[in-house]
Amino acid sequence: MSDFQPISKYSKKTLEGISFLTASLLGTLSHFVYEWSDDNFFVGLFFPVNESTWEHLKLVFLPILIVSVSEFFIGRIQREDFPCIKLRSALLGMLVIVVLFYTYTGVLGTVIDWLNIVIYFIGMSAAYLYSYRKLNLEKLLHCNPRLSLLLTFTLLILFMLFTVYPPSLGLFRAP
Image (tube, rainbow, N blue to C red; front, side, top):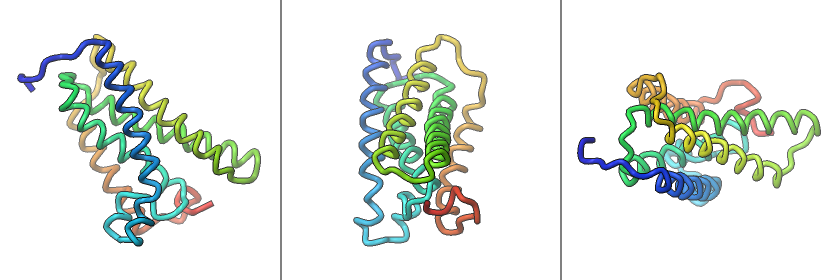
């Protein structure tokens, strides 16, 4: 990490904006990858295989993970708490989606596709706004970067595991 040169606040804003657009586009395209792969099992471990909320959270998690790795190296970000910020960012985006989806479907009693798309972008916006704000703080977050990386890897494994063996809970069933 000693070769990295810090980037300016303006560049961070630009980088987070580009990262938001890239992750959102990747997430949107990811919705169709399993079908495009002719229902390939391996592809299904990383991309949604059905319309359950859990599977759709892959549209947030995986693109943020991929873009964050790129952002770390391309953006030359030297923050020790970077893994913590990005994990919290992804978790926030997923939480926003779950809360908004179950709130509106609970109130209306039906699923509205265009509203799901809006909620997806609200979740991604929340994730990247959080990330941008935390990356611009002088003070580091109180967290353990190694634990954040372990939790990120664990969540990735859970996405794969629960795709193959989904628990009998509403989150894992198609609406």
